[in-house]
Amino acid sequence: MNNQATGLFAGISGLVYLAIFVLVYAGMWKLFVKAGRPGWAAIIPIYNLIVMQDIIGREGWKIILLLIPFVNIYFGITLYISFAKSYGKTGIGNYLALIFLSFIMIPLWGFSDDTHYVGPSEGPSSATGNLSATTY
Image (cartoon, rainbow, N blue to C red; front, top):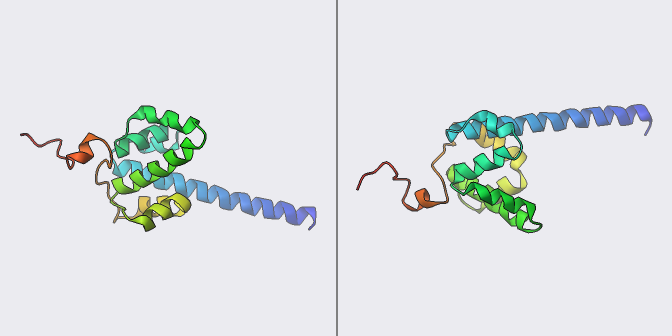
């Protein structure tokens, strides 16, 4: 391959990567808005993970678990599974799709009118069925 063809391939690959990057963050923006959080939080590194923790009902300090080798893999997988549950996407197919094809699933769910935030999937509000406004 000559240098010109290599440069063309690199340019096209870069544009495809940029398009996927923009679609994923736009989808995440939409998912954050559906959960009642500011959309701009999706584009701020690390802060977007803190907001995701809030959306699923986890404590914010657990983001520190991303710094521990091998624990971060487990933490990331459970974060995505709980995130899917918070939008009513249950089942092993949805979980695996989000884990391995997140660049497709996040924009798909973000721009879909059928995907709605159903509440945190973890924490005390999920155990009570999200009845925080109910008086006893």
